Image (tube, rainbow, N blue to C red; front, side):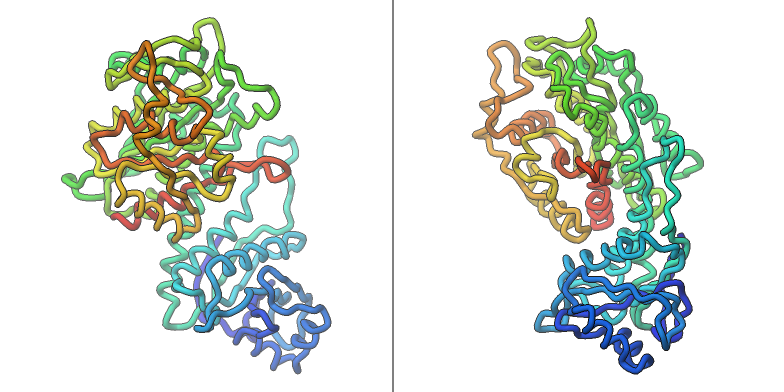
Length: 497
């Protein structure tokens, strides 16, 4: 998709579809007003006839509009203005998300959107362009590649032109570049997440990481096999793969774009490519969605895809703990005690609490890179879904500055997180009579005690944990991976380069 930022004339712009704004109270944007004047106020008459008053998300598609060069005219409602004449960032995104919906039945491949006459509270042209690009590219994602006859959608964008003022086109162009890079990372994360477990195995994830590094001067990949993990003492991670015919992989990615002396930021992803629950077998209904239990790993790979595209001057380490959780005769049993790389013994009371078992060894391994911050990303607990639904990722941290930086990045990227408590009060729920720590803390505060478990292995670093069990994928008719939290992670990295 070719995307550019230019100064556009709403009347003269030759395009298959021109998109202009209307605000609450039927207030036309400057571009819409120019079209209205060129068409003897026919636009105003049509909007009134259709009772279009500019509420956020309203849309009106006009074919063969008179008085302008565009083949189609799409009017989108952006909602009301504040006292400064700006709209909210939420309304901006909600309105832009209606553009693909309004055009999905058309054969439009060339789109022009005039954004320069829309003021968004607290946001500049770079942000507007970036958000628009991410929304439009996301609308083109297809999840039916494994069907014998994939759909042939009519709405396939090939060219997009964003209209801005002369003073803001350079800023918008920067936003386009960032938006395209993030969109590619999100797309990769969605693609990997949607793959079934018989294709996307730990070995497949390792091959995807190697493919990403191919021909890249700043990115290198190393894959540790089970023998090496055993030598390192990763008894916790290996206890999860014990019941699977698929060997576990520890995937180590190093992006070196900064000074050699600069400490890296580390991203650690949970990569359970299919989770049956092990001996603590999950109920059968909905178990197919456990192919999404590797979305933390997918988000790390997606973020590194964006890093390769943007080439920022910084150092980033990605660690992916990849395994299946299966219940064969060699599988770990409830009550078994395993020894982690950190030397702590763990009583495995529930084999379905396996994510923390692979992550704790991965987090310990990460310390060798002496990172200035560590963020782990995991579809860790159903309890987090109960607490936050699918709107916000759960955030836990042992460092308040790190937590605030992640929250800020989520707000900027519109990929929000919500900070949860990590109080010592919850730690006692993990007490075991037979080992240093139990792998579950009972039903109360399940997402918190899971984070408390991980905190035992991150005492030497500034660490944050993102529980994305509610945000990594959607169920029901819209079933599919979302690619979150790639936008949040990329924004955090860009803020700290």
